[in-house]
Image (cartoon, rainbow, N blue to C red):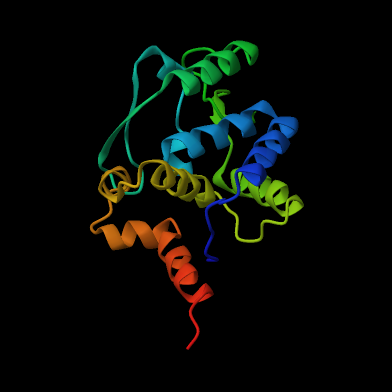
Length: 186
């Protein structure tokens, strides 16, 4: 599996969001959820429209089987509410829905492969080579760290065992190393 990177350029990040919105509101919402919660794609795809009924997203993470509780801030809630209304989603509908139905005729979420394909295609249009579904989570971590400089909080959010793992995960370690080498010459 290729390593993906966070999106470090805010203009590229905004352009990707714009491109995803043009591709379809559900893809834009998928990205917003990833960029603003740090949830894994496997957890984003299981979210249903009823999450706006509470103040927090509360799930059991698919990968770790650990409980996760995450605040839905006012900005994200506003985006979610508008999206749910414009998409005519019922409380039990998947937010990132597929046009395909299961064997019982029930709605399904898009697949992880579809999410990956859309992100890769739109990211490649912007020159992003190291992009995938995990880019959403890593981008959340990168920008959260840039704003708050609190690796302990991110470590907790990501359920990492050490701060060094979190910094490496969001690409900060590489950035710090590169910055120290830029002007170093003896």
